[in-house]
Amino acid sequence: MTRSLRKALLQWLLVPAGLAVVTFLPLAFHLVHQPAMEALDRALADASLALVPHLEVVDGEPRFVFPAAAEQVLRADRVDDIYYLVLGPNGRFVAGDAGLPHESPDGEDAHADRVSFYSHFRGHPIRVIAVHRQVSGEPFVFVTAETTRKRDQLRVDLAFALFLPLIFFAAAAGFTIWFGVRHALLPVEDIRRALQGMQHGALKPLDAASAPGEIRPLVAEFNLLLDRLEQAANAQQRFVANAAHQLRTPLAGIRTQLELLPQEADAAERDSRTRQCIGALERLGHLINQMLVLLAAEPGGRQTDLAEHIDLPELVRDRSPEWIRLAENKGLDLGFELQACHVKGDRLLLGEMITNLVNNALIYTPPPGEVTLRCGEIGGKAFVEVEDTGPGIPPEFRERVFERFFRLPAASSPGGGLGLPIVREIARGFGGRVDILTPVSGKGALLRVSLPRAAPKP
Image 1: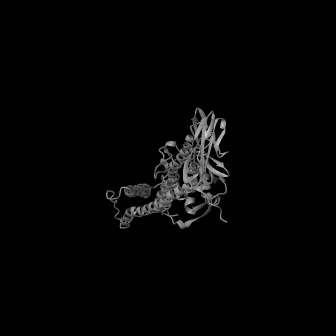
Image 2: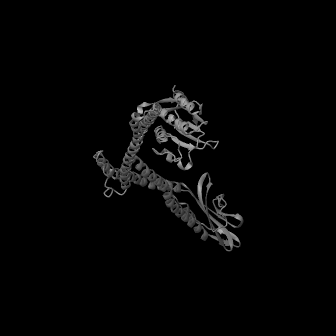
Image 3: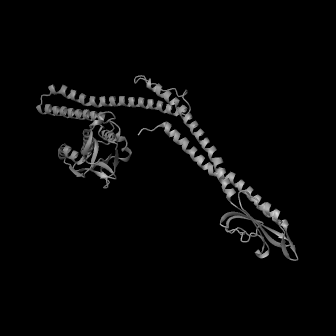
């Protein structure tokens, strides 16, 4: 699936902006709503305080004188119903609307100078303010309450007043972000045009100094890529030089033997030199074959349409006769432990990879030794491993043995140093990896190749 830089930038910018708007809305609503509610509470508390001057105590009895005109003014409201209540010592009713709640249901201190809470009265939700005052040395409670219609409407009005501007702000911010991202990506298009104009034989670094600061790391990485390509070309040249040296050595030996062959009068000596020439030619052919396999294993070396479903046990059985002959000639015990498993890839390259693993083990394992080839599935991966009882690979060399033409300092058997590099290159082409492990016995070497498994053919 193709990833879009523009889409990613828009997501990273628009999603946090949207979350910020969603988070800001309740916060802003609270910051505006709370002072408005407090203003209404203060007005209701002032109404409670307005009741205090109308109470007097005569001969120990409270008398509440509240003219009808004053009561009409107190109860006048176009939206809500207003209630009041005056209570004397011990909650004794003095005047007002009997049964009006005056103690907070949530446990708020009922003896505080002012108590405010929500409750219900006559089937409607109400807001209650209770003010505690001393009159002639006696405690009295002056309660005023109103229905919540005005407060509910205020909440709705505040929500609309905040929500509509935020919608406009979000739309404006979204358009600004989209427009800014579109124009900010124009330098990327300029770089694409510059790359398009380059020729494969005249690659040159891009000018990082003139690139925008945000694009400059990309340009720097591209220039580093050019450096790596140059290093790869140099490595390829070194490989060619090493290959030429490896080829020149057996050719020089063959030439020497052939030059001395006519001068030998002894038939046995001529036969010996002839066998040496044949052996050198075999090593030369093996080396050339390995170089061709390594070239085919590199990226782009083989056609991708050559990939097929491969039955690993079947492939091993097809290739095993040549390994068995080599093992018999060396006096080694070659064993097979094959479990059903399948991979997908180039059959020829996979066969060469297994052949290199087995041949390496057979070459470096002294007789009478054992070499075991296994394949199967473990942890959702297919694997091929070869275990031997040879000298093993010291831990300090377990990475270097994958270098081309590298051979262990203590290696006594002939070889070109390409076997394990071929194994790693082919394994990488299959999307797998190669690990050098120590066998359970602690002796010899265990090389395991892990590959992506494939379902069997239907």
